Length: 192
Image (cartoon, rainbow, N blue to C red; front, top):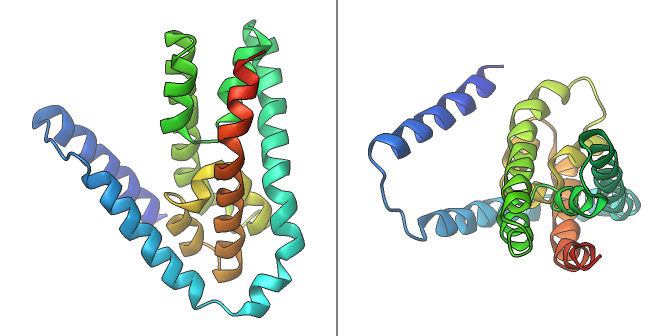
């Protein structure tokens, strides 16, 4: 629980810093992401091959189940909110990848682009908050799906901290497959 408070405190400190000082980081966030992925790769590289083989079948099915669940959530949201099915599916197809979803949808509709950005950013934030709480109560591997595409990079350290190296392998592959498929699925939906 202490970790969750630290994450929330860091988020709040970042919000306040951005509001008060408006620092220009340029591409520093991208460099930090590469460093994060490097360390994650080192950690995954220390995992044994037997761990990777043990999870191989599950690893392939989980991202497709995540995408299907996200799309079904988009259908439900469009029915509940009374919006077009196209926009509900497009927003949900981002699977947490807000930096792609928002701008891509924004080319068709500024309002739905903003919604796509915020909904997918919220998914990442919910993963950061919920995974540590739920990891001890729900099976760790299926729980990876809440992070969507972010499980390959930004939420992977949290998943690794509150699970094990086997789950980290599942999370990385899960995020990688989603990251590889979203750029194809989202434009198809936007063409509807």
